[in-house]
Image 1 (cartoon, one colour):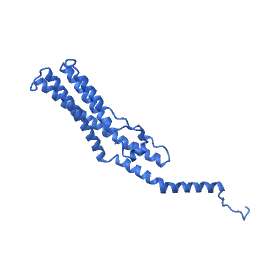
Image 2 (cartoon, one colour):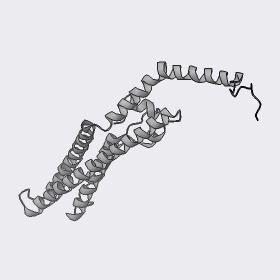
Image 3 (cartoon, one colour):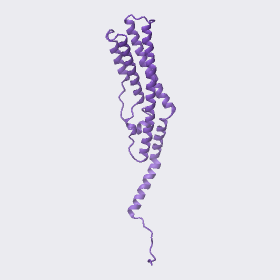
Length: 211
């Protein structure tokens, strides 16, 4: 027979009570001070997946493409005119029609890429939200660049490439002094991203920057 009168209760040690007190204090700090920022961050992450964000980035892409190809069209027209090409000729119209087709293709491709990158930003934001909730560093958004500038650079590059190809096709390379070079330099400057101060991914989303 077993011995009677003993207690099976395991008493809490002083160290355990101290740890529980610290945990409770940390929870109170989180609920009262930190959770509001976590909720704000999550709201901003949700905004990344709104239809308006995808529409905005598509609009930026379309605007950049229209501007880049508009300048390419002007430069090509000037180059053809300098060589005495008749604006009503088949050769002239074919060059312009091809440039217009390439503009449409570029706009579709640039918009699709930008919207896909926007989706990637949203997924990265979700990963950062999980990391923050676990008390870890939020780093998933750190490698995501500025989509607007990326789209503008691609649009400028597509327009410049199309312009140079048309110059070559028309046999105008090197015949119009400085035309291609001047256009290329202008497009490079227009497509260059401005220097920006690096901030944390969480701060970037909270401040609504980069998208």
